[in-house]
Image (cartoon, rainbow, N blue to C red; front, side, top):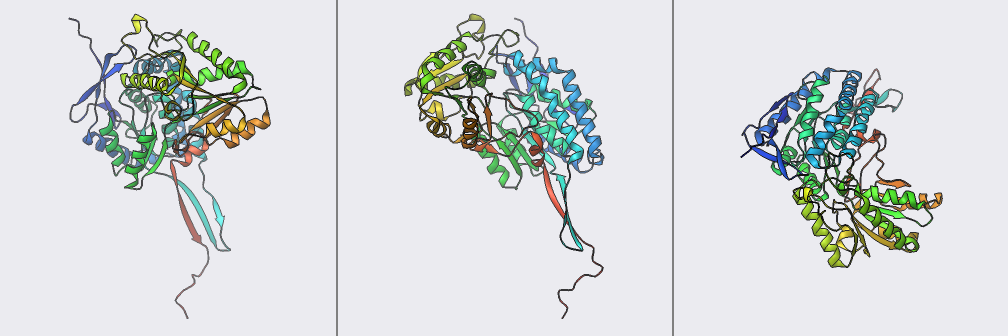
Length: 494
């Protein structure tokens, strides 16, 4: 019998990789094979206390608060440089951890450093204001860091979504404890090693691996000043409730059920590319997946037929191959969820016109693969149109006119993102204004940029990531009022 040696993934606390205090571990599976590849240290309450304590010391009296904003920015920029230099290593590690096609993780690693470079440049540009109140009274505002930030990151794009939180948090002068999803812990620990290599002091960035117990302890810890979360909306609500007991700052990006609207007057070739990429990239495991495709009735049949053909043409397979378009889902849990929703859609009256099952290739049998799936004859009240599937499944709905499209698009509890394809600029502006979403894409889809704010409406969350707005999420305002008068008026004098 051949025993495969598992790689060891430890916690990262105060500048060092360490085992958990109680020596407990869990196994991380390669989702493309279903086989164990790493043994991961599981953080308990003592580890949470150690990580938050290290971050608090680093914030209160370590080398970090003594740095000027410019010096801080230079270290963050150096971290971006290291991420660029290690891009291929990180892409391979993330693909092994979450099953995403290597062509997509390479794409993410190519843009990842930009978040750190952008916020490095912003570090010394955070400025307050001076407000002349009267002839002798002046008010000044100061933007100050919050303290220790708990960054809770999902499994779909661990490094990219860590950057959305870590880069602005560091730029503002905070310290951070990252908790990656239990399915994908490896890249967070490697990131923390590069943080130290960049010269950022120990304790400024820490990593705790674990599941619900770890996350709940981190959110509840009195030493944490802010929780920044990306994940499903149900968990976001629980985090907001828990954080409220100690009045922590919270920013939450929850789920989505994003509408993707195609008008007959649009460039249909480009719209087809956008529709397929909008829902099938990353095997549909993106919070902004255009999983409700609204198609003008006069082109509905033609467009659905072409989308089905496109879906069938995509290569599902080994995520480490550059030829693969669609890798695996991240876990058996996700695979069961996706298959369950497709079965539910059929029971509700939708029709599968592409996909609808796992691939039959024998070499993929051990992994968590699912074919890109197109559901026709969908109705907006169906659960497949109301609930986040988080897989490569798109429901196609016809509409007669712009008003119906808007009503349908807004007819879910979510409001993370939406998109439209049209060659009528007036229509584009009307639709963008009417959609109840935090982001609207016009004649493109899934374009996310470090300079542009991102976040949700309705049950998709609150707070903003990326762009200058993100820095506001990691600062608090102090007001200093100074009276320059020679004499102070006595309110008790007669």
